[in-house]
Image 1 (cartoon, rainbow, N blue to C red):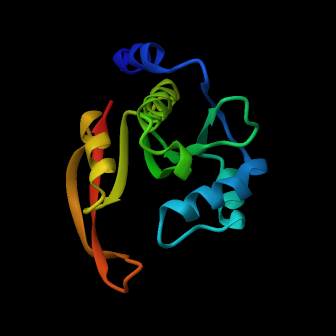
Image 2 (image 1 turned 135 degrees about the vertical axis):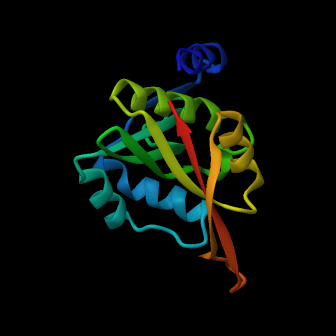
Length: 164
């Protein structure tokens, strides 16, 4: 995992920083989540998740902004963690921001004693799948018709894991 940290240090540019998040950021996280997913989580849902003892949330801040431009949220249990959500605001997408955010978060999980990270992703989300595969996540399962799509259809969820 030391490769993640060195990669993060080499690729992060000066106008980007990653910092821990808490319940004060719930409204902004809900807005970002709503811009990225068909079924948005509310600010109250984020407040509850962030208040959990095993929750870990990191925010991506571009420039001097006080509100995050992206986030990653996971939940730890024993030596495993599940990434619950990762999302970037529309203006942060396509700028290579997800890679350092994920690298930083995985490094934080590793330092906290996590040995395996799990997540699920919509089968058709090519950018997310490419990101996760680049980090070494492997598909371990499939949930047919798991996600509701805006057009009323359903999409499969792929479950993926990374052993640290």
